[in-house]
Length: 75
Image (cartoon, rainbow, N blue to C red; front, side, top):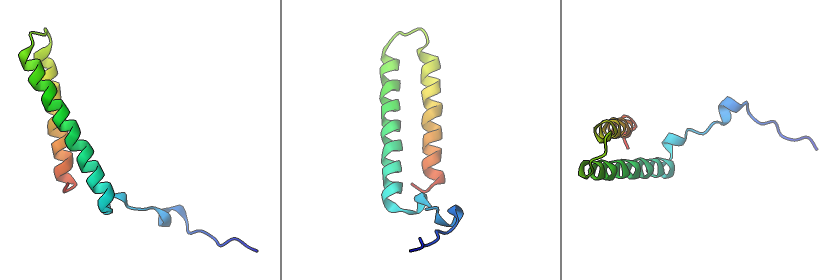
């Protein structure tokens, strides 16, 4: 028997961002990451680490980008 031909790969691709389960999973993961970064910032604010200000600034930029990602994807 001949095997049925599959459509070209570009026609097989699944648009994962259109599936609610993937969207909710990504949203939860990114929100968890934001919460972890916010806790790190609070911990750093309580310490006298020499580079705390730089680390806080970096974490705040990461949070901003993650929140922007959520907003851009309507998550």
